[in-house]
Image (cartoon, rainbow, N blue to C red; front, side):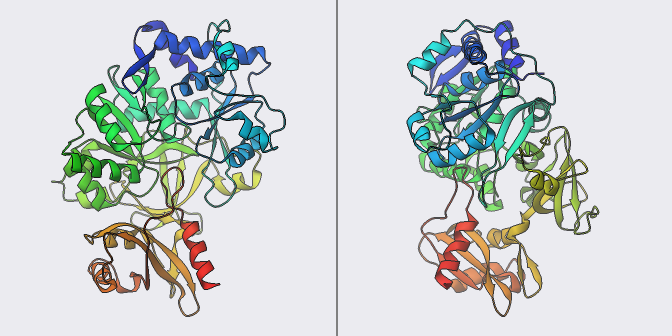
Length: 505
């Protein structure tokens, strides 16, 4: 089924329900939302675009985003959402690689100036061209799509090379959306989805279930993440839910603490996309209360590998509470999760190996990349490239990406456990641990630390040795003002490695 049918049904059944907001200002009800999408879809069809064709969205978060996205689906075409924060050259590569036939972009001239997309038509929101599309006679209903048809071509963040295009089918998106209701949070018509993280990625994936339930969709006036603005929108809009990377949660908690706010009006914060350290989620609970749910997923299995429930996060009386906070929860309803050893066989609880997942939410494959498909998809299982272990209760604890494992003196060291230890020092704000080549040890542990002041390295050594084996503590500390991050808030360990290599060279 075409996911746009959810929008069409909601507009039919509850046409006057408020749908699209900029800040607190209502821009469109569901009838208006669906009418815009149906008109854009009809205009695309009139240009010869339909099933199998790809249409890119290279836009920052805006109130135009969802009508454009659904307009693409109304036409039966495949949406290619591109992070609006990318450089025009980066976006142009994705557009060219995907074979996109039409582009919605904030700055079409910058894209065309790259010379990489030829004469692919590009139009901007607010332009006469988009106004003409919105005036087109609308399609009466979304074009039919089968479960195996690709609805969303999701390009990975590409922190270690060119991004890959994960083909997400209608069935993938439906499975992910229904799993949200089963494993993450309930959604009511009076709820509001707040888009403070890029809609081209995780935040945008949660639009479907909110459309299906006829909930509100709120774009902050800033178009992005501003902690003070979010706290205010929570108070004004009520029942607000949002997706946030752990770095965003930390900033929101800091702002709330300084403002004396408990996040009134914020219903749920779903966090994921990077490690949430135990100390940080404990502080978040102390400041904002039980508003948190954690998810673990990848673009290849969007938001739907495991979930750590609101109850698990909040239940400090449970004897395993600390261990559960350090985990990413249990398999979501649509997912089978295994830990695979080096020989490809499943490992028992407690043993560390590569995390594999199988289910109807797993992508159909990477676009035009048979080598990556052969590496990542094995007998129906997605090999995530992440290392972790399952406990006897089914809780999954991530250790690190396989490529981030540090092997020093023949012993495996997982950066995350070193980072967790260092973050218990009261002056350490952020930390990222990597391995650096060493002629004696093979690799040594190096910690990049952001802190208030500069603690003595001996004090940092002490917090490590009080919690982890002595051989795991960093042999070098590098104090920095900030850690390099990509547009999704993930720390770029590749940049840290390059810094060390440059210094060594």
